[in-house]
Amino acid sequence: MIGLIIGIILGVVLLLFFVSIIVLEVSYHKTLYKRADGDLRIKYVYSYDDVIREKISFKNKSYASLNGYIYKDQNNNNPKALILMVHGIGYGHYYLMPMIRFLVKNGFYVLAYDQYGSGLSEGKYITSTVRGISDIECAFKFIKENDSLNKLPLYLFGHSWGGFVVINSLNIKDNVVKKIISVAGFNNDNDLSISFSKAAKMFSWAIYLRNFVRFGKLAFYSSKKSLLKNKTAKVLYLQGEEDNIVPVSMSGAIFKEIESKNDLLRVEMIPAKGHAPYVTIKAQNAQNEVMKELGLFGGALANFNNNIDYEKLSELDPKVLQIILDFYNE
Image 1 (tube, rainbow, N blue to C red):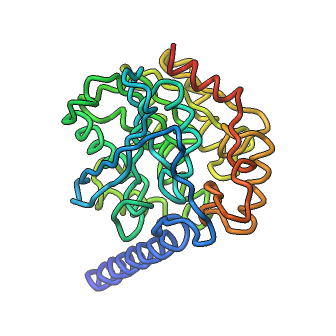
Image 2: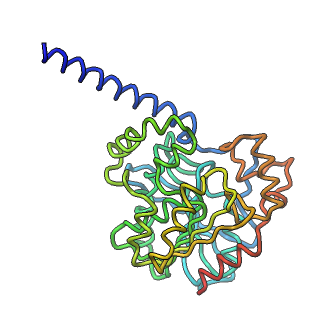
Image 3: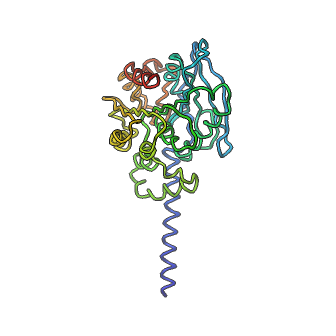
């Protein structure tokens, strides 16, 4: 009798486990982790007349091709450093083109690749944000094996998902990164999931388990832990105080609390700014209007449409740009 009861209990537990995993997977693929190719209503602008680019491609640990470009000023053969840029969820690196151009015109080379399941790269869908940590390790390897790149100081720039990735790349053995800028990077994959779905809080354990099965110890990485134990790279964290995509309570506020515990960390919370604090208030308001029309992950942070004034949506904020440039130049 006791054996029967134990068997029934175990059966119920297993049933709940599998139901939780199924619900989690369905929820993930309907919200965050679908293929990120932007919106067909948007014309993505990807080049400038005064910036040249060279196509690059490397394999991740699943043998998927991750594709992108090295961007340069054609008149600059002596760059200050190589900036490896990692984008957020939505659509590849193209929506960061204004920032890429700014950095290139200020003396840097920029290597920007599209993450797995995004834009130019392979992948049926974005499986998890923690995959990005594994993938940036492959980007490091690509740079290390490239004689035209491996002699340059290596800096990182990441936005949102990319901001999470660049901070947690600090855990990668033998990395040679000197400086990191994370814009609106979150603390961990679990927090991000919960911020988009309160129901996900019930399955918090399942999120960790799911990621552990797929990606091992990466499932337990957090930006807070990575920043606290960082002893190698200077880190600048930027976020808008009114970010409604990555809640400040799960990101900037946490990092601000630990700022005094590590001299290599500097946190700047930008007043009246949202998820992309490097654009002007005017551009931010215009982006918000487009988001209402196209939806959060419809490529709204790229906003390149024949019917939309590109300059209006991508205008960069000189004050925030100066913070970024000063950090890279110091």
